[in-house]
Length: 334
Length: 263
Image (cartoon, rainbow over all chains, first blue to last red; front, top):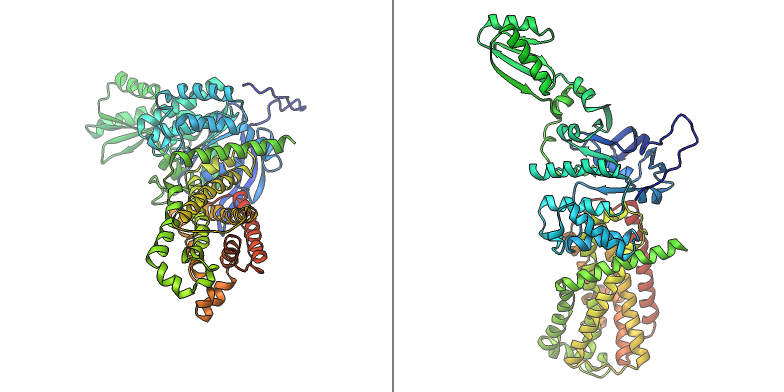
């Protein structure tokens, strides 16, 4: 279903953002969870909110999906005010949370038909959409099985399929791959990419994995203790992280000296005979390093690539490592 | 107008979902019936002779002890029905499907309405079963059709009150286990009223409690309707309790749902 949007009268701003928020604040008791969040997410893009457990990711999703009210601040989703036109917002969004919201005692097909009924689709259209989604998510064979019998990956797929019954323009995915095995994670990534490519939806994604944000998102915002501490494209963020580097180890100090002269920005470790060259792990960067070594006939003993991860992001952006104990995948309710 | 018809349609969808599950997994519903039936058999056959002669035939309107016992036990089907409501609402909440509904443009009331109406149908069916068992083991009411209708109406009203309370309990309970424990005192309350023995036979403090708790006037009214014993002010007091509890339960459950069931 395509939604025709009337462009706002302003000549400068031709497309209203899918999600816009200013100064969102939320606290539970005396615990401040969100401390003034501003967002501006363009239509048809994937936005990733990256942060450790307890940073406030789920709270942000809960506010933007009309589940809870913010204490302060304003937000517009699909051009509608979040609290003044909550039902209009609800008809434009779809939410798939961290914990699958499927009815365990109903079959996959019944779960989808339930959604169709609640979206007031007529019976035939509901059936057609359910069948299409089951096929699209590779669930046709288990359509008649109750969700209770499903594996984690299948449940997550059914959950997302249920979200899509209403043909949402904006989809919130709260940690969509947390707790999934690597293969299911890849499948989920593929599904998310196709959603953007085929349906042109806007996706608001939360994750604790930099790799996931890197793989999927057009823009990434880093959330820590309820504040956005950085925002940009994956590349922009990674440039700010010195953690990504290529490490060369040499047989003796002479080779190290020669190599250090070749790579200007490198930091050297005399004792370990290593040289750290800042840069990402892309093939072109690697090739450039190898080419330089080859043309100058400097012999390196070994080469290792260090990719920046969330720990590096946090170390760099906050000046301190991630709070202990938050790295483990534990249940997050804030 | 459209909003209203959507609200009705959404509630019907939710009701259909609950009834479908109740029919597919009847074990929870069966527990509701089994508890009062066991009580009925236990008190009638094991303790019936002693209790019956103890309270005297007069309390039961001249009949056997089963006639005194049955109304209170039938009411217990309503209280144990509340248990299943609390459990199923809480299960929906912990499974996250409530939050899914809350992010959808469905009528706010429909989720709870679907549960409450579904539970009302289930519990009334359970009550009918318990009445049937009571009749089988010798319960002999002498009520007219109007009195029967009044008794069923009162039980339905009580079930509605308990179901709304239970829906609220289901929303605030942390998990289904807690949800099944919180209404537990409710299922014991009839024992501390006039269900098994007349309140006059109790020690003073307990007797004071028994006479002023909600179930006693309701049980006494049912007994009066079925067996022709003195009803007096019990009908008004019982009805007032039902209406009052329904209002409290309704407002509380709706507010809890609106402000967000905290996981």
